[in-house]
Structures are given as structure tokens and as C-alpha cells.
Image 1 (cartoon, helix red, strand yellow):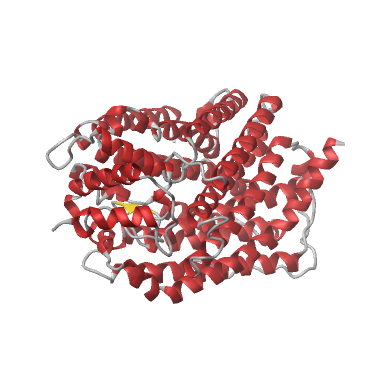
Image 2 (cartoon, chains in turn yellow, green):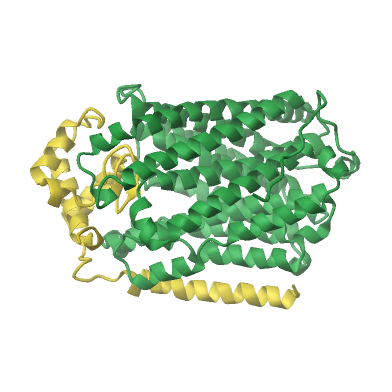
Length: 123
Length: 469
């Protein structure tokens, strides 16, 4: 392959990548009725989701660990009370983290938000 | 398939290749250090993987000391650390000689290694004490990202200062190594965009960007590892055309296209725009087919004498070729949106990841370490030991891979939708025989990889120790 062709191909790919990335960051993932803004309480839940490394066992949108169930639609399928009981008490497989009521509520807020965006799960 | 039975080693010790390359080659000590610490990371990573797999069967096993939410990140992070250290070790060892220069700065490279290892130890301690805060695969508290980014900037400076000159005339592996180390930095920074409110408060955008970055990050290490494979193929065959031909550069640009655009299959289920998924599907995973084709053609160009002299790295590269074909078939299958809908979020995805990281990346990087040990350092290894480790690793990996597929298929067939299995415990019980199989085969895989690693550890430690004194 001639030198100029190599650099031109590289340049073309990079330009396409920049345009593609900008599109993904904006139009491809913009807020909509199915993708509302996360409120403050749900953001707190998301931070706790990371702090307790929930993703090592559970999935959201099928992404995450496999030893526990996918929780994308757990609040609509099981209800908040069920989710709260599991979060606060643990199960045979899930450790008892000793979370506070406020922390459990924040995580449920986050899970409820995720549930509301999961249009592909509900058909 | 296309692969012939590799030749076996009949003598008790592997014959050393001619020493002419070794005489003109003085690899960076840091390269050896990276490979050494990488192999140690691999073995510990495998060990935590075994512990995690036992916890699938026995939930109470070490539940207090090291529960699954700790073993999984320890396993994943250590294995990823192996791939990066193996790739960095190969680049530091081979890049300077490839352009007939010395490494720009051995000191900077040492700082890179020290920073990387110290940060790694800090991350292990953080996981062990239950301190998290990051995302999947990067679960550590976010401030660890600072030394990782800084240390990676050091290899970028060192690499480009070393190879400076007419890049266009260089072989493809110089391009691939450079692309891989730059791409990692870009994708690593991109994976922290969630710290900005406009991403944090929009979950669809957040998850899409997270997996855009994660997918491209895998592409970045593939560039470094496949670049190493090209380097080895050129050195073993003595045929420079292997890494300079039009088809090779076509593969490079196709691989780069995959790195930049082919991540959308991770997010088919995320409610982002449809065109993002369509682009991913159209790009597909053709790069592995091309690589398999190139390795196959390279194999045909080798004489018996060349194979015999480089039989250890040759056989590891050949085994990685088999794994490329197996993974290619699986990749194409799970990239089809209708199939992906049922396989996504199952152990089929794990099978794909394990086949790629162990079958392809690990075998290529072990080939690189053996090339350094045998061809450059002129140290022999016991052939019987190598044969045992080689076959145990590959057979165990095949059983492991099939058991993951089995567990994935059970989950896919569980419900109308695999994400809404209820009760989940029922699925775990139905998959118990597959979990037992992957736990046992994972254990024999660890033994196989340990047998392959022991001679390398001995030679590399000896080399560092002797050169230090």
C-alpha cells in the first residue's frame, strides 16, 4: 500500500469516527419520553449502585454479572417493597450489606428510573 | 478445519534456534519485567476466577472473607492487567530493535512499570477491603484512574520517541502497536465521561458511551496483541512480506474500523437510536477472519526447519488460530440482532470473552514471552512439560468454553425473554451441571497455564536477576 494512501485512509477513518462519536453523544442518545432525565435521588442511587459494586452480580440491560438476576425491570415486576426487603436483608447468595433505609430508597429510585426507560423489555 | 495437527516436540529439551538474532538484539529489561509481572497477574487472576466459579456452586464458600462481588473484579482486573502488561512487555522488548534503535528512555519505561504495578497493588487492596466506586471492569475508586492515565502517557511518549521517523515505511506491527496505545488512552478517558452531569443524568447516553468505550478498549488491546503476533510471524518466518503486504495493511485498517465503530452489539437492548445498532451490525466482526487467513498463509510459508527451531511460539500461535476461528463463528452468530436478543446477558457472552482473552490474547502473549525466552535469551525449556501444559490448557479451555455455552443456552431457553427469568434460583439450579463443568475445567485450565508459565517465570526472573548483578 502506498504511503499516501495509508495516511489518507487513516485520516478518513478518524474524521468518520469524530462525526460518529459526536452523533452518538448527542442525537443517538438524546432525552425523550422514553429516556427522561435522571433526578437527584436516582443519581444518588446510581452512585450507591457503583459503591456497592452491584454490577458484579446483577445486570442492567443485560450488562453486568451473571450470578444474580437482571434488575432492569425488577421494580415493575416485583414491586418496590420486595426490592427493598432484598436490599436490606440480603439472600442466601446476596450479602447483607447493612445499608440504611435511605440508601435502599435511593437504589430503588435508580432502579425505577432504569425500569421506565426499558422499552425493549416490554413487548 | 484449515488447521493441521501441529508438529509435536520429540526431544527432551526444545532445540534452540540460531543465535544470530540474539546476538544483535538487546531487549529492554523493562519489557522482561512487564512480561514477568503480567504472568504473575494472569496466574492470580485465574485463581480468583476459580474461587468465583466455586461460589456459583457453593454460595457460602469464602462468603465472609472474599465474596463474589470481590472475586469477580479481582479476576477480571488481574486478567486484563496481564493482557496490558503482556502487550506493553512485548512492545518494550521488540519495538526498538524493529526500527534499529534503542528505547528512547529506559528510565521512563521503569517509571511506567513501577506506577503500573503500584497502582495495581493499590487496586487489589481496594477490592480486598471492599472499596469500589467505578464501573464494570473498572470498579476501583475513580482516583486510581489518574496514575493509570499518567503511566500510559509514559509509554506513548517512549514509543513514539523511539520509532520517530518515516512511519509509512514501517511494518504493520509498528502501526498496530502505536494505534493500540493511543486508542487505549482515548477510550480510557472516554470511559470516565460519566463524571459529567450531561452523561450521568442520562442513563441511555451513559450506558451507550460506557460500552462504546469498553468495546473500543478491547479493540485497543487487540491492536497491541495482534501487532505482537505479526512481529512474531515475521521473525519466525524471516519473511518481511508477512507484515508489509497490501492484505496485511488492509487487515490493519479493517481492524481499526472495527475498533472505532464495532461496539454497538453490546447495546442492542439499550433504547438508543436504531442507526447505532445498524452501524455495528454492518461493520460486523470480519477482522478475525482476515487475521486467521493471514496466519494460515504464514504457516504455509514456513519451512520445516523454521517450525522446528521456533516450535514453541509457533504452536502457541497455531492454537490461537484455532481459537480465532471458533470465536469468529460465535461472534458472527451473536452479532445477529435476533440471536443477540436471546444470548445477550447470558454465559454465551462470557464464552466469547473467555475464548478471546485466553484462547487468542493469552496464547499470543505466551508465544511472545517464549520467543523472548528461547530465541532471544537462548534458554531452553523441557519439551515434555511444555507439551503437557499446552494440551491441558487447550483441552481445558475447550471444555470450559463449551460449558459456558451450555449455561448460556439454558438461560436463553428459560423464558420468553432471558432478562426476565423468574425465579432466578431455578435457572441457577438447572445450570448446575454446566457450572460444575466450568468450575472443574477452569481449575485444570489454571494448572495448564501454570505449567506453561513456570519455565517462563524461571527464565525471566533469572534474566532480571543476572542482569541486575
